[in-house]
Length: 280
Image 1: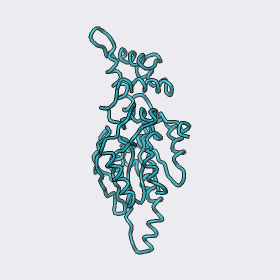
Image 2 (image 1 turned 45 degrees about the horizontal axis):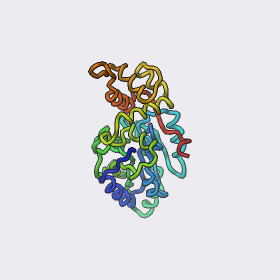
Image 3 (image 1 turned 135 degrees about the vertical axis):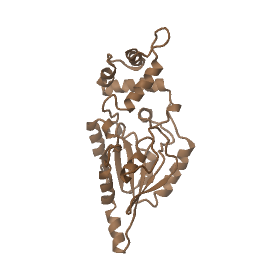
Image 4 (image 1 turned 90 degrees about the horizontal axis):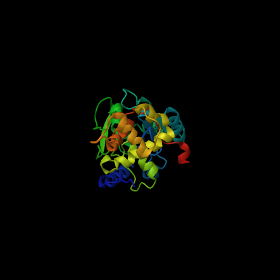
């Protein structure tokens, strides 16, 4: 069973709930490789009717067709969904435009009272989806700490984007019990769960099985091996890469690390695990 909910996440959830009272809108960051798996039910119950923009980040790593289907599913009930790659300069301009549009009514009501309202926007999501990177892109400079692993942001941080917009960076937060292990595995594949608590070998076997079901060419073309699953796949990857132990046996642990790393770095091609039909 994969589950990770350290103490700082409990504290973060309380902080998020308190600050939602003063926020005008939310940018909800999802990973394009598992956008629907990234949706935290605890957040959904807190948000209510608040204006929400789903920022489907790392779009360059996702399957365009499946990402488009997820975007369509998320763009309902007055909410917006936007695919982007936050590491690309000025790629968050559509997010900024959506914030302005969704908060236009509040801004105009304040102007009628002679007040130039500053919009407060909370940025939230599960770990390692790129929340801090999106904020830095919005600001045009590095104002928050980023890192390609879970748990980099631990506390809240208000950042001024311009004279009319402030954004709150929040820690990546999961839900206390990952009861759907399919979702838990996908979050682990993309680095939203701390690697140190995972069984890398078992995770890589599951990854190989899921890739061979959804994108059978991903592994075969990357490693020049025949289609196989689980342990047999890791054996083939190890031999293809020359990962051998003393005596010539396959180093499947090293192959497991390589497979997961290749997925995260986009070397296996454009992949999106989630299908809308799975979340109906």
